[in-house]
Length: 213
Image 1: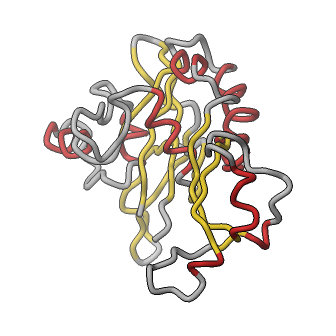
Image 2: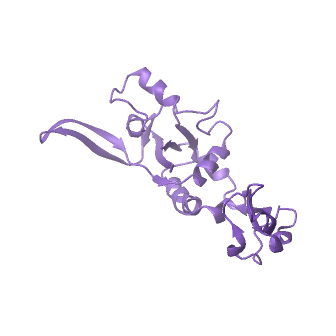
Image 3: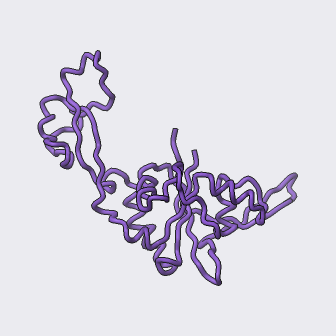
């Protein structure tokens, strides 16, 4: 199942947090507008797990789905609150609504925290199965994927003990940077972070993000 990551930006001004970009949404019936409201426009909305893994790694409490998660900030703007897929109504002052969102998959990070992260050199260990003749190229498994091992030698499916291909392949591991592996991470680092920096200083700008199944 694909997961969509939505990221909204807020900046602190006039003693409150406000979205950096908004739009007017309406509810109509029979051509008659019955309701309208202002909603935050996402800075990022893509089906991507890699970038989410990094956001969840920047701060120990910033990963949604885990105990101790930050949840939505208590002073979240109404516009971003409305945009959250977990938002069940348009009642701005309903504390129960905010509590539901805080317990959802919502989390947040300051620009200072985002800028302090090492976006270029962070790596993770990948595992896979390759033809036996290339397995020694991977050494202790803590090096980049060897250029001498052709992609066609990589077997993309797990091998059970009774698989006839088992004796032709070996399990290996290698290190790879997040940037090399996930295109959206590079986009976030090279495009979105500089954009966030134009909105204000590090502790007056933040992102609020969540996952949408």
